[in-house]
Image (tube, rainbow, N blue to C red; front, side, top):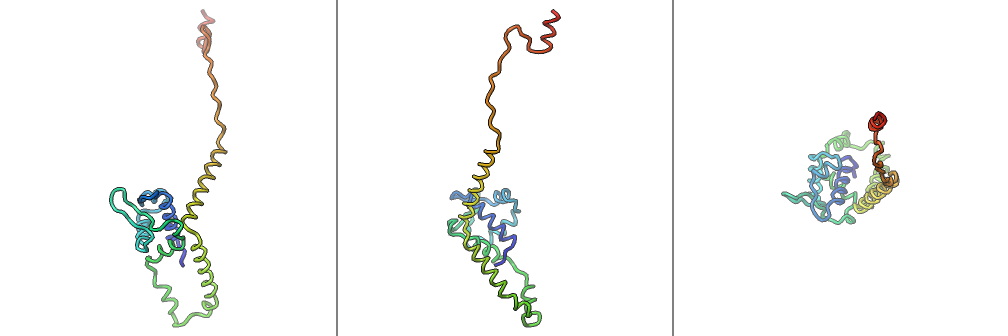
Length: 181
């Protein structure tokens, strides 16, 4: 499993989609504006997610994308794999491997390390669902609101203003006029 910016953006966008869908479609321009991801990049990512069957698209006014599975049934690994699956990959990896027709001894020595690493990363990402990310997002938002509320200064108590009694000067100029008279 390759971990790239594309996979990260896909997870971010799907989390935003799940957070705001409320049973209806979410338009990509909204996700683009909220997450700071270019619209054309999102269109490319969501095309791959749609081909993988993770989202469906609805055309026309009020259209957008919806998840095909419930958030607790969709893992981060599924999103990353789907977003990378339909991306064209350079042939450089294959060319490097076939350069002399056999694997380099140093590559053989570390192959098990990288295979184990990728397996553990995949297992970890498979264990996290979109529902987990939504729960974390909700918890962080409520913690931020609590912190924000606690850091605000206490509201001032309203002070009743006293109006001056009649025939009492209410400014320096009025006082001057009263004393010169």
